[in-house]
Length: 171
Image (cartoon, rainbow, N blue to C red):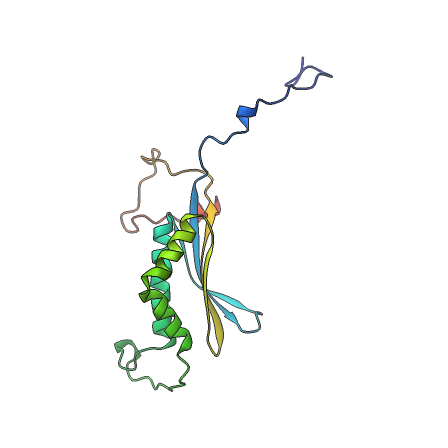
């Protein structure tokens, strides 16, 4: 006999138990903040993050919504503006929507509930110049993290909890 099976002989059917998953597949969350032109011809990734749980993904979205609101409608007396001339446009709708989302516990709970159910969450606001989207989507993880780390793999003291970009390429 050569190979796995005898020549001319078909393998028997697989048992039903071999099809049943043994455990739910591990899931991570890919979070992105995007700015898109109003005609959808160009998109820019403002920030990206890989979260390990729905709570961390929702928390990241909340922080990004707060940052984006501050950038769209800055405080004129903010120290980072120094003496930059500001032109008031009166268009603060997008920043107001983001601030409302950050301060509303029910909306945060809704995002957390959807992410825990492994459903993507998307918050999009439109300004006079662009469309801004905060997105968190579940992504499968090929293998669970190994604890303790394999021999020869020491965690980086500077970036505790961070992995090099090459680690994400393997996903």
